[in-house]
Image 1 (cartoon, rainbow, N blue to C red):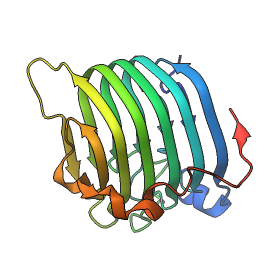
Image 2 (tube, rainbow, N blue to C red):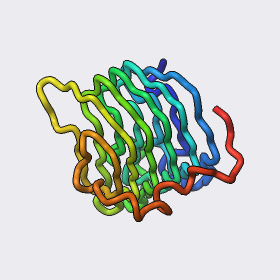
Image 3 (spheres, rainbow, N blue to C red):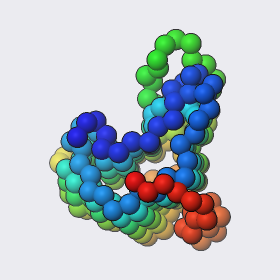
Image 4 (cartoon, rainbow, N blue to C red):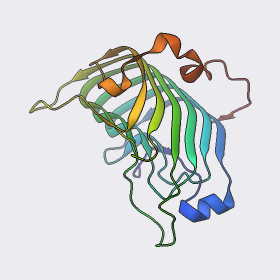
Length: 211
């Protein structure tokens, strides 16, 4: 199974920036995923060449530490944006959703800490989870907050013991609609006026690879 069941990457720090080969136009669909020590589906943390225009649909994640994870750090540069994730079922997952800018591993000491990644326009819609310990952990970077995180029609049954916060957020902003448990205030803006930010990939025109 490895660490992450499926992971999209595109280069590490200054080497990925210099090579400049993004991962783009990818379609992942109809898969059952399990990873007891990592994520069922992950983006990064090596993403310095950029990751964009990704459509993910009809996933079943079970017995997994992190359901869906986005990982990056200062020094990465690059971007993770224009991601649409639809129709996901989870069961027995410790952390359902994660987006973190705190992955501090680097290949050497030549990285530029001023090379800040962009995480933007991430839409997650139609998701249900049972036996979830924590719903979401969204921790962006102070100098480069994560923006347009869009959550819609999501329901998790939380079973943490002892009880813990369902959501943790900092340096992020976004929109939500019909999400339970209710997300942190950073992600509670009304989704009704954000269609251009949230649902631009619902009918993608570009050709995508089939995974």
